[in-house]
Image 1 (cartoon, protein in one colour):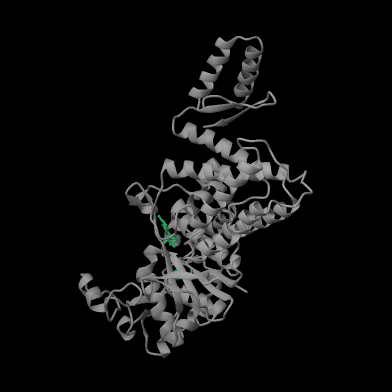
Image 2 (tube, helix red, strand yellow):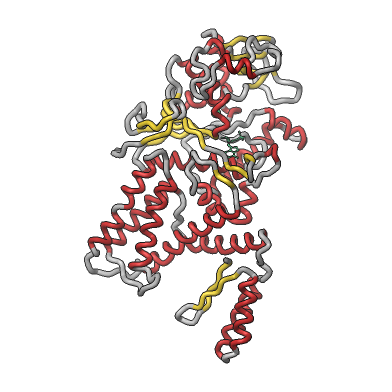
Length: 495
Ligand code: AMP
Ligand code: ZN
């Protein structure tokens, strides 16, 4: 059972509140997932990773979590893209559902409990719309069903907009069948060649907002505990979800609402329409998913984040720090000491999980939690792993405590990998790609590097210091750092 009090910044009240779930010890969590019309970009990855970190935080704090994240696989953007490519809309979106799942795996995300698609939820969506009509919140005209916003009295409670100011904001005349300019579509008739389903209002397809209300209820019941999405979804999408669910169910939809801030590119939001996107796939191919995850997890979800060379470099360095530590630790624990643990050192290690839990429970502060983890890595490097001093064997008790800590960090953050070697290799080649991409060097092939290293070793043996220096300079210019190890070997890495 979870013993720590969780605090969540609830956008319904714009304040940090103590988290109380409907069923103690359990969390019903919904996060709005992607529209599957193209490859996702690193801005979408931020929303996905934040959802995953919320999921992981509750698990790491001992909650049972039911987590639903949808795929919007029926949508205008999908239909347009599929037309351009001359393929069926559902075939097109099925491909990008698969691509998205591949991206989430590269980002080391835990699978949600449920990942419904709109195309698989049609029965529940239609029933939901029927209920809204029966209760007088929606109306149908010529095959189109609209939600009548003025009928829902607390409309605007999440986005803090009132209907009057919304009316002033809308200059266009009430279009089509709308009785009020804020009314929104629940169901629309299909045009020729578009995907369509039978309904009491003829062949058609749902509007965007209704899917989340129907899916949340289908998998988690009428009141869920916590709902997440990007900050752009707060209005109108989440406001409309509340209007639909609370009108149909007659009870509160979600107790807490969390929104992640944007990942910006320069001064702008990263978005497809601005053409400034880097896809998750491109990044993963060049640098690897572990680095992207580290970069995205390093900033609190309520802070805006700038996509810059600096944050990527910091991500690489942090990930390297963790896995260089794990590599040395795995080596050292093979020959443990049989002596009792140094009790002060043991206490230092044992206090880290509670410290990290405290941070995570404070509005999902993953960066705060990680700072404690980096603190203990520094401590163990200094005391045991030979950074600046000799290596010292670890007692069995200390090993047990460190293993438990690593499992905890792995579950809570997804930033710790059991096998550090491929991660460290990936970081090294990422640095090379990064150096090349940034024009900082990267002119040497792996073969040339190996040859030059042997030539330099030979030059040093024959006391040809001039050539040895020259080679060091070549490496420096190519952005490579050499390290002469005490055993006479030379290792190198991209700076
Ligand atoms: P979309 O496919 O545009 O509906 O977006 C899917 C999710 O990604 C939503 O939760 C958006 O809020 C989120 N999102 C889109 N662009 C960004 C961005 N630049 N930074 C953070 N989240 C974003
Ligand atoms: Zn949604």
